[in-house]
Length: 286
Ligand SMILES: N[C@@H](CCC[C@H](N)C(=O)O)C(=O)O
Image (tube, rainbow, N blue to C red):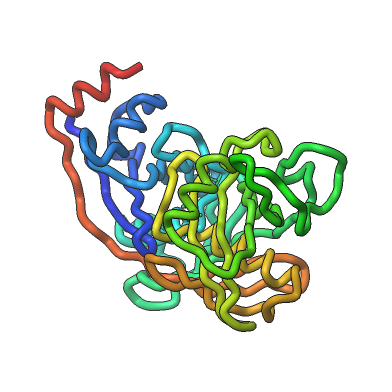
Protein backbone atom coordinates (compact mmCIF):
# COMPACT_ATOMS: atom_id res chain seq x y z
CA UNK A 1 0.00 0.00 0.00
CA UNK A 2 1.35 3.40 -0.95
CA UNK A 3 1.76 5.97 1.80
CA UNK A 4 -0.74 8.79 2.09
CA UNK A 5 0.04 12.05 3.85
CA UNK A 6 -2.22 15.01 4.57
CA UNK A 7 -0.73 18.47 4.34
CA UNK A 8 -1.89 21.42 6.47
CA UNK A 9 -0.36 24.71 7.50
CA UNK A 10 -0.64 27.01 10.50
CA UNK A 11 0.06 30.52 9.14
CA UNK A 12 2.52 29.15 6.61
CA UNK A 13 4.22 26.75 9.04
CA UNK A 14 3.50 23.58 7.05
CA UNK A 15 3.19 20.07 8.41
CA UNK A 16 2.49 16.67 6.94
CA UNK A 17 0.33 14.26 8.91
CA UNK A 18 1.39 10.63 8.95
CA UNK A 19 -1.55 8.70 10.36
CA UNK A 20 -0.19 5.38 11.68
CA UNK A 21 -3.69 3.89 11.60
CA UNK A 22 -3.76 4.29 7.82
CA UNK A 23 -0.13 3.78 6.81
CA UNK A 24 2.44 1.07 7.30
CA UNK A 25 5.97 2.39 7.57
CA UNK A 26 8.55 2.35 10.31
CA UNK A 27 9.67 5.98 10.41
CA UNK A 28 13.40 6.58 10.81
CA UNK A 29 15.38 9.84 10.94
CA UNK A 30 16.34 9.30 7.30
CA UNK A 31 12.80 8.64 6.10
CA UNK A 32 11.49 11.72 7.97
CA UNK A 33 14.22 13.84 6.37
CA UNK A 34 13.33 12.57 2.91
CA UNK A 35 9.56 13.09 3.34
CA UNK A 36 10.11 16.66 4.60
CA UNK A 37 12.73 17.50 1.95
CA UNK A 38 11.39 20.23 -0.34
CA UNK A 39 13.26 18.96 -3.41
CA UNK A 40 13.37 15.19 -3.10
CA UNK A 41 10.26 14.66 -0.94
CA UNK A 42 6.86 16.28 -0.37
CA UNK A 43 8.38 19.07 1.71
CA UNK A 44 7.33 20.49 5.07
CA UNK A 45 8.46 22.19 8.27
CA UNK A 46 7.78 18.93 10.12
CA UNK A 47 5.90 15.66 10.37
CA UNK A 48 3.02 15.00 12.77
CA UNK A 49 2.59 11.33 13.63
CA UNK A 50 -0.84 10.52 15.00
CA UNK A 51 -3.29 9.90 16.34
CA UNK A 52 -1.56 7.21 18.36
CA UNK A 53 -4.61 5.73 20.04
CA UNK A 54 -4.22 4.77 23.71
CA UNK A 55 -6.71 4.26 26.52
CA UNK A 56 -8.88 7.39 26.31
CA UNK A 57 -5.88 9.14 24.83
CA UNK A 58 -5.09 10.86 21.56
CA UNK A 59 -1.33 11.03 21.27
CA UNK A 60 0.71 13.13 18.90
CA UNK A 61 4.38 12.71 18.08
CA UNK A 62 6.07 15.79 16.57
CA UNK A 63 9.09 15.38 14.31
CA UNK A 64 11.30 18.17 12.96
CA UNK A 65 12.41 18.01 9.31
CA UNK A 66 15.92 16.97 10.45
CA UNK A 67 14.36 13.85 12.01
CA UNK A 68 14.67 14.98 15.64
CA UNK A 69 11.65 14.82 17.96
CA UNK A 70 10.14 17.99 19.47
CA UNK A 71 8.28 18.04 22.77
CA UNK A 72 5.64 20.43 21.44
CA UNK A 73 4.53 22.47 18.44
CA UNK A 74 1.79 25.07 18.72
CA UNK A 75 0.93 25.10 15.03
CA UNK A 76 1.34 21.32 15.02
CA UNK A 77 -1.26 20.89 17.78
CA UNK A 78 -3.77 23.18 16.01
CA UNK A 79 -3.18 21.34 12.73
CA UNK A 80 -3.59 17.99 14.50
CA UNK A 81 -6.86 19.27 15.97
CA UNK A 82 -8.15 20.13 12.49
CA UNK A 83 -7.05 16.74 11.13
CA UNK A 84 -8.80 14.89 13.97
CA UNK A 85 -12.04 16.66 13.02
CA UNK A 86 -11.59 16.21 9.26
CA UNK A 87 -10.81 12.50 9.64
CA UNK A 88 -13.72 11.91 12.03
CA UNK A 89 -11.66 10.96 15.10
CA UNK A 90 -13.38 13.49 17.38
CA UNK A 91 -16.94 14.73 17.69
CA UNK A 92 -16.49 16.89 20.80
CA UNK A 93 -15.85 20.62 20.62
CA UNK A 94 -13.20 20.54 23.32
CA UNK A 95 -10.81 17.69 24.14
CA UNK A 96 -7.29 16.85 25.27
CA UNK A 97 -4.32 15.63 23.24
CA UNK A 98 -1.07 14.30 24.65
CA UNK A 99 2.35 15.35 23.41
CA UNK A 100 5.81 14.69 24.82
CA UNK A 101 5.46 17.94 26.81
CA UNK A 102 2.17 16.92 28.49
CA UNK A 103 -1.48 17.66 27.83
CA UNK A 104 -2.90 20.35 25.57
CA UNK A 105 -6.60 21.24 25.43
CA UNK A 106 -7.96 21.90 21.95
CA UNK A 107 -11.13 23.93 21.37
CA UNK A 108 -12.77 24.55 17.98
CA UNK A 109 -13.94 28.13 17.60
CA UNK A 110 -15.88 27.56 14.37
CA UNK A 111 -17.86 24.84 12.61
CA UNK A 112 -15.11 23.77 10.20
CA UNK A 113 -12.35 23.71 12.81
CA UNK A 114 -10.17 26.19 10.95
CA UNK A 115 -9.98 28.48 13.98
CA UNK A 116 -8.64 26.75 17.07
CA UNK A 117 -7.77 27.74 20.61
CA UNK A 118 -5.19 25.68 22.49
CA UNK A 119 -4.35 25.65 26.15
CA UNK A 120 -0.62 25.11 25.72
CA UNK A 121 0.66 24.51 29.26
CA UNK A 122 2.81 26.70 31.50
CA UNK A 123 5.84 28.87 30.86
CA UNK A 124 8.99 28.51 32.91
CA UNK A 125 12.06 30.74 32.80
CA UNK A 126 14.14 28.41 35.04
CA UNK A 127 17.45 27.32 33.55
CA UNK A 128 17.20 23.67 34.60
CA UNK A 129 13.74 23.33 33.07
CA UNK A 130 14.53 24.96 29.69
CA UNK A 131 17.45 23.75 29.82
CA UNK A 132 20.26 26.32 29.91
CA UNK A 133 23.68 25.50 31.41
CA UNK A 134 24.94 27.02 34.69
CA UNK A 135 23.41 27.43 38.15
CA UNK A 136 19.62 27.21 38.58
CA UNK A 137 18.14 30.64 37.92
CA UNK A 138 15.54 32.36 35.81
CA UNK A 139 17.24 33.25 32.52
CA UNK A 140 16.11 36.86 32.19
CA UNK A 141 17.90 39.47 30.12
CA UNK A 142 21.32 37.75 30.21
CA UNK A 143 24.16 38.42 27.79
CA UNK A 144 24.99 35.50 25.53
CA UNK A 145 27.45 35.29 22.64
CA UNK A 146 26.20 33.91 19.34
CA UNK A 147 28.85 33.87 16.59
CA UNK A 148 31.13 36.15 18.69
CA UNK A 149 28.41 38.84 18.96
CA UNK A 150 26.76 39.59 22.35
CA UNK A 151 22.95 39.61 22.61
CA UNK A 152 20.55 40.27 25.51
CA UNK A 153 18.58 37.06 25.86
CA UNK A 154 15.60 35.77 27.84
CA UNK A 155 15.09 32.01 27.76
CA UNK A 156 11.86 30.17 28.42
CA UNK A 157 10.23 26.77 28.02
CA UNK A 158 6.63 26.07 27.12
CA UNK A 159 7.44 22.37 26.84
CA UNK A 160 10.13 23.04 24.23
CA UNK A 161 13.09 25.44 24.65
CA UNK A 162 13.19 29.03 23.37
CA UNK A 163 15.60 31.94 23.42
CA UNK A 164 14.05 35.37 22.88
CA UNK A 165 16.18 38.32 21.75
CA UNK A 166 14.58 41.77 22.08
CA UNK A 167 15.68 44.13 19.28
CA UNK A 168 14.50 47.35 17.64
CA UNK A 169 14.75 45.94 14.12
CA UNK A 170 14.19 42.36 13.09
CA UNK A 171 14.41 40.56 9.74
CA UNK A 172 14.59 37.12 8.19
CA UNK A 173 18.30 37.66 7.42
CA UNK A 174 19.10 38.50 11.04
CA UNK A 175 17.05 35.55 12.36
CA UNK A 176 19.03 33.21 10.10
CA UNK A 177 22.37 34.82 10.96
CA UNK A 178 21.79 34.58 14.73
CA UNK A 179 19.76 31.35 14.68
CA UNK A 180 22.41 29.24 13.03
CA UNK A 181 24.75 30.02 15.96
CA UNK A 182 22.21 30.07 18.82
CA UNK A 183 20.54 26.76 17.87
CA UNK A 184 23.66 24.77 18.69
CA UNK A 185 25.36 27.12 21.20
CA UNK A 186 26.95 25.47 24.27
CA UNK A 187 24.48 27.25 26.59
CA UNK A 188 21.72 24.95 25.34
CA UNK A 189 22.29 21.21 25.90
CA UNK A 190 19.10 20.32 24.00
CA UNK A 191 19.57 23.03 21.34
CA UNK A 192 17.07 25.90 21.10
CA UNK A 193 14.41 27.68 19.08
CA UNK A 194 15.26 31.36 18.53
CA UNK A 195 12.90 34.33 18.29
CA UNK A 196 13.82 37.91 17.46
CA UNK A 197 11.27 40.10 19.23
CA UNK A 198 10.14 43.59 18.30
CA UNK A 199 7.64 45.22 20.63
CA UNK A 200 5.18 47.38 18.66
CA UNK A 201 2.96 48.45 21.57
CA UNK A 202 1.44 46.86 24.69
CA UNK A 203 -0.84 44.55 22.71
CA UNK A 204 1.20 43.85 19.57
CA UNK A 205 4.57 42.22 19.06
CA UNK A 206 6.41 41.09 15.93
CA UNK A 207 8.72 38.11 15.76
CA UNK A 208 11.09 36.39 13.34
CA UNK A 209 11.80 32.74 14.02
CA UNK A 210 14.63 30.28 13.57
CA UNK A 211 13.43 26.86 14.67
CA UNK A 212 15.47 24.07 16.18
CA UNK A 213 15.70 21.23 13.67
CA UNK A 214 13.90 23.20 10.96
CA UNK A 215 15.64 26.56 10.38
CA UNK A 216 13.77 29.70 9.33
CA UNK A 217 9.95 29.35 9.38
CA UNK A 218 7.12 31.76 8.58
CA UNK A 219 5.35 31.08 11.87
CA UNK A 220 5.60 29.00 15.03
CA UNK A 221 3.01 28.59 17.75
CA UNK A 222 5.35 27.80 20.62
CA UNK A 223 7.66 30.63 19.46
CA UNK A 224 4.70 33.03 19.56
CA UNK A 225 3.83 31.88 23.09
CA UNK A 226 7.47 32.06 24.26
CA UNK A 227 8.03 35.55 22.83
CA UNK A 228 4.71 36.79 24.27
CA UNK A 229 5.63 35.27 27.65
CA UNK A 230 9.06 36.91 27.60
CA UNK A 231 7.66 40.31 26.52
CA UNK A 232 5.06 40.20 29.30
CA UNK A 233 7.60 39.06 31.90
CA UNK A 234 9.89 41.96 30.94
CA UNK A 235 6.96 44.33 31.52
CA UNK A 236 6.78 45.38 27.88
CA UNK A 237 3.21 44.24 27.13
CA UNK A 238 -0.17 43.44 28.62
CA UNK A 239 -0.93 39.73 29.20
CA UNK A 240 -3.06 39.48 26.05
CA UNK A 241 -1.46 40.34 22.71
CA UNK A 242 -1.33 39.79 18.97
CA UNK A 243 1.83 38.08 17.77
CA UNK A 244 2.64 39.12 14.20
CA UNK A 245 4.79 36.70 12.21
CA UNK A 246 5.66 36.72 8.47
CA UNK A 247 2.98 34.02 7.89
CA UNK A 248 0.18 35.62 9.92
CA UNK A 249 -1.09 36.55 13.36
CA UNK A 250 -1.67 34.53 16.52
CA UNK A 251 -3.58 35.67 19.61
CA UNK A 252 -1.73 34.79 22.80
CA UNK A 253 -2.89 35.25 26.38
CA UNK A 254 -0.68 34.72 29.43
CA UNK A 255 -2.79 33.59 32.39
CA UNK A 256 -1.97 34.63 35.99
CA UNK A 257 -0.52 31.15 36.77
CA UNK A 258 1.81 31.21 33.73
CA UNK A 259 -0.54 29.13 31.57
CA UNK A 260 -0.74 30.15 27.92
CA UNK A 261 -3.73 30.26 25.59
CA UNK A 262 -3.02 30.43 21.87
CA UNK A 263 -5.60 31.05 19.13
CA UNK A 264 -5.04 30.88 15.39
CA UNK A 265 -6.03 29.58 11.99
CA UNK A 266 -5.29 26.31 10.22
CA UNK A 267 -5.39 25.72 6.44
CA UNK A 268 -5.80 22.39 4.65
CA UNK A 269 -3.58 21.97 1.59
CA UNK A 270 -4.41 18.48 0.37
CA UNK A 271 -3.72 14.75 0.32
CA UNK A 272 -0.47 13.36 -1.09
CA UNK A 273 -0.29 9.73 -2.11
CA UNK A 274 3.34 8.83 -2.56
CA UNK A 275 4.42 6.90 -5.63
CA UNK A 276 5.27 3.22 -5.45
CA UNK A 277 8.96 4.14 -6.01
CA UNK A 278 8.98 6.70 -3.19
CA UNK A 279 7.14 4.33 -0.83
CA UNK A 280 9.71 1.59 -1.53
CA UNK A 281 12.62 4.05 -1.10
CA UNK A 282 11.25 5.06 2.32
CA UNK A 283 10.79 1.43 3.36
CA UNK A 284 14.43 0.77 2.49
CA UNK A 285 15.65 3.58 4.79
CA UNK A 286 16.19 1.82 8.11
N1 LIG B 1 6.64 24.96 14.50
C1 LIG B 1 6.49 24.68 15.84
C2 LIG B 1 7.64 24.30 16.68
C3 LIG B 1 8.20 22.93 16.23
C4 LIG B 1 9.18 22.33 17.17
C5 LIG B 1 10.48 23.05 17.26
N2 LIG B 1 11.19 23.10 16.01
C6 LIG B 1 11.35 22.37 18.32
O1 LIG B 1 12.25 21.57 17.99
O2 LIG B 1 11.12 22.65 19.50
C7 LIG B 1 5.41 25.48 16.54
O3 LIG B 1 4.47 25.88 15.85
O4 LIG B 1 5.45 25.62 17.76
